[in-house]
Image 1 (cartoon, rainbow, N blue to C red):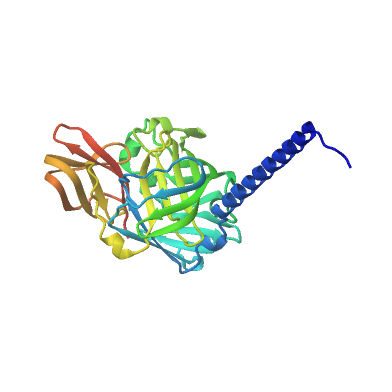
Image 2 (cartoon, rainbow, N blue to C red):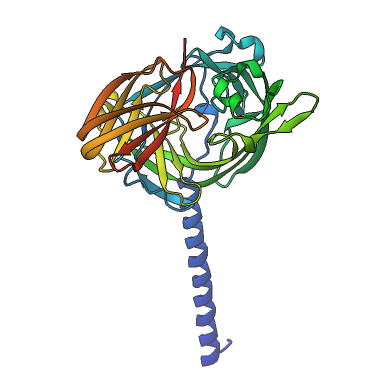
Length: 396
């Protein structure tokens, strides 16, 4: 019989200790990996809209208490502080029912937009592509155009998994006649061109950067979060007499839609809804939330909400508008205020003064304004601009 000395016994205990330690490490790693895998989800094509689907969302233009957190997961997001009094219904129709379908023959779906405008989408097994639209030009000149993205912009993908990343580019080339341009715009140029064209380049980067559970007013959802950054470079060319196309972007004063514009948003997607559960628009530099569109779970909950944030603000409804606009003042100190409306050249085209104490709603008629994109500002009695936002005027 072999005799094991004290050293041998100690060695055996040491081996047993190391084996147990390795076992618990493996067990811990297995449990952690299993929990991590169970916490994240795969988004399937179930979240693609189909013909006759109506998506119901609300928008909080002054989100308060919204923390998007850091990448990774599992995370828990609490967006129950979102407030918005109006519901937007977006209905997807068969594309063949659209008036501009002949310009988008490969489209499967169409959405009617305000002012008889139409947006067209191509739907495949793994992509929802935004093909383009018929409606107002992208820089607010008030011209109706057929706008086609080349290639189409991918709005949704499936399957979608944590840490997926994509980069896509698209372009627009939109020619139009000088006769379609507002007179004030032409007056600002040193020479009258024969025609114009818009050149727009879009670079879209996307990353599924987080996963977890999102709570909005009325419900919880397991979600994947996609970060989307769009960099739009918009240039305006003019065809001058006896001269080829010339870039005149820098000659156009104060147009907020020309040049480079970067937008950044976080999309929270779930297999349990066709709507994004939330879309958080943020400041591209600071990541501070500036606007949140979210799924309407219970219309009675949404209808009871009010804009009660303490920040002074002004809203226009409906927007886009056919001319009748209701301006809602919120949380203003007692005093005189002005609403000023500017056209795309930065010229003031409408102004009115109001006495406000706290909150107030007023209706105005803007039928004298031609269709197009405008900016409206709230100005206090000291001439300080408190807020500036975009207003769309459309015509039937």
